[in-house]
Image 1 (tube, rainbow, N blue to C red):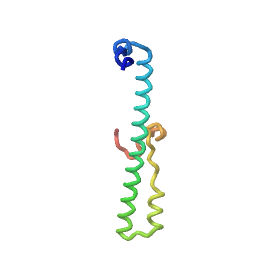
Image 2 (cartoon, one colour; image 1 turned 120 degrees about the horizontal axis):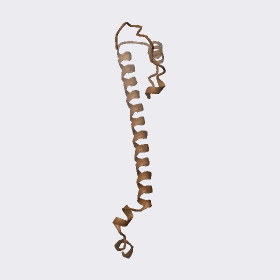
Image 3 (tube, helix red, strand yellow; image 1 turned 45 degrees about the vertical axis):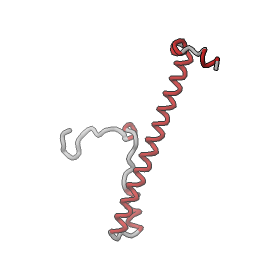
Image 4 (cartoon, rainbow, N blue to C red; image 1 turned 90 degrees about the vertical axis):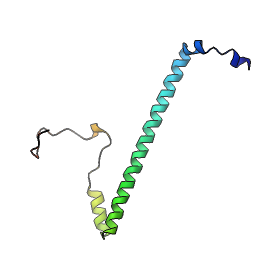
Length: 96
């Protein structure tokens, strides 16, 4: 109990240890949020794909048609910089 009684909060907050602990806790929090959001997105994509497949089965599509539809769709990249360069012209004729 003497150790807790001798702990000085003000001197701890002004020390380098507080800064180091804050940096590590913040980095850990950011990493945890990044991992959780990535996994949540993967689950949502899998749920959506499963729902699409179930609707196709209910409509009477056979396995080959479902496989062709699922594998023919373009992969949607997670990050914007993975999408590639933007087109220099508007092929559809729409002004942006």
